[in-house]
Image 1: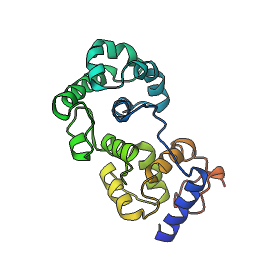
Image 2: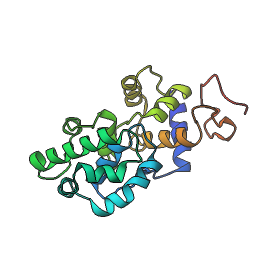
Image 3: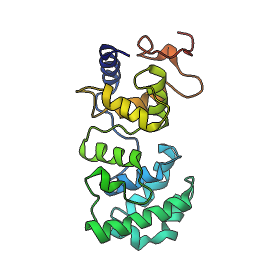
Length: 211
């Protein structure tokens, strides 16, 4: 995809959602971090249903430790892999209290040292919380980047590197959100909604549905 086509792709996506935001509900940076950790292999809607009551009660790592692992499990038992996720949230909360004064670290590399926090999670947190120009590659972003020809790659790391190289200002800050929304609602996995797609003429996907 040419630089001009990439600019036009994001211009159209931006026109539909000028200020995209994460669909994960949160009240501060800590609850954002917890929500993103819980969202692995789960839907944002499912995480939101589980965390509304949790975040009404718990908004700091200290409060999470007071709730305890079993108390956390009671809130998130509808989320896949909740046992492992509960252990990770408690463990990362302990580290935040012990090593970071109860605050979520600003640096992506430090975030990645926390239990349950991989590169995608760290990218989401620093982008949403502080506006860093990062590219969190989830299944939606991976699919759209490959289908369109925007940043083809066989691995998440390759797609992230491709996006870093291909996406220019002023699109960089919100790029992954636009791609997530496009993949979630239009460029869906099984039967992409190509007839309704605003970027179909720019897309290089050979398997387009009838336009």
